[in-house]
Image (cartoon, rainbow, N blue to C red; front, side):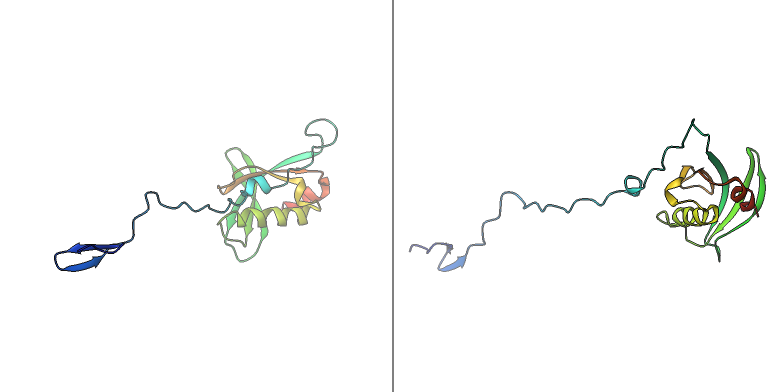
Length: 143
């Protein structure tokens, strides 16, 4: 007896054949990755005049997860003096750094684009370069 297409003869009974397996798995295209935070950050404008003529680097000791964002005071570190800053944002995915930049920009009267995180992206000790801040605003920041 001849079996119909897709059927296999087994003794007296016939059984349906399983569909043929594909030789290769199908590949799905993944969506493109979102841009990283570093690639989307605006770079500060170059300081006017000679290098560093109108910019200041602040050393900060940051405590994320505080009840409010504020300058607590000054402390002495082995490298020199630093400002202690409490930041209300949690230390996850750059939220505390963004809140620190927002707070410093408002306190110093400059745009966020004029602040540059030089060192300490994942550390409590941070160095921030400020372009074009007024000296009296910098002096009043110390608490």
